[in-house]
Image (cartoon, rainbow, N blue to C red):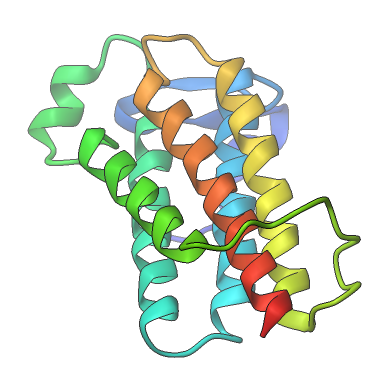
Length: 173
């Protein structure tokens, strides 16, 4: 099957399990913002190595899970579960909180820098990912609660905090 289906030519896009919505729908806006976040993190990850790159890779895997949740039509929870798709939950949120605490350590970051002011390219890439994460979080707030759970919203909030901390730490190195 070709990626060029032409089904979107009239301004609609497919959801999982046969759902269809307009491309301007809040659900698609949120899905697109999370997709952009995943791409921005990929751009940062290629400039990383070791454990930090592995952690960002794990976050990207969770973002794919999150995109699955956002691509689910209203009322298709049972089909989603049967298909074996995952969900963002308390475990992922706790992981994000622990990751942030590990980055922050005893540091007390003060004020806002202009991205790139004290850091290199990696810090600037992380700041871009952070701003995309904030936008994704705002877009997810526009989606019905039945589709975008509170856990998804909290996860994105914690992720943007972690990315700010990581960028600031990188600016110190």
